Image (cartoon, rainbow, N blue to C red; front, side):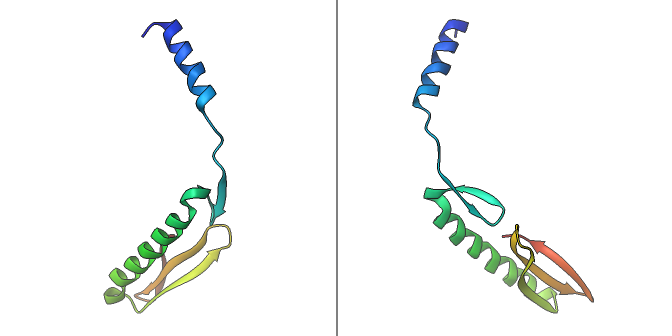
Length: 87
């Protein structure tokens, strides 16, 4: 593609671009149209992570360690707390 063709393509793409409206979910900005799906997936992942860890840990729970980041899966294994994931 020649430079002039590339420039024209970039300008055309700019004209077609639209601003995506986002919502804050935990620490992330999620496209508004995907927020419900993101939350459902986050919940599925949290439940799966908890099920995986249950046989190995004394305590498995969801807890808010940081208000901005939201809930995390926190486990107690061998007397130590671990932050497994922020689903």
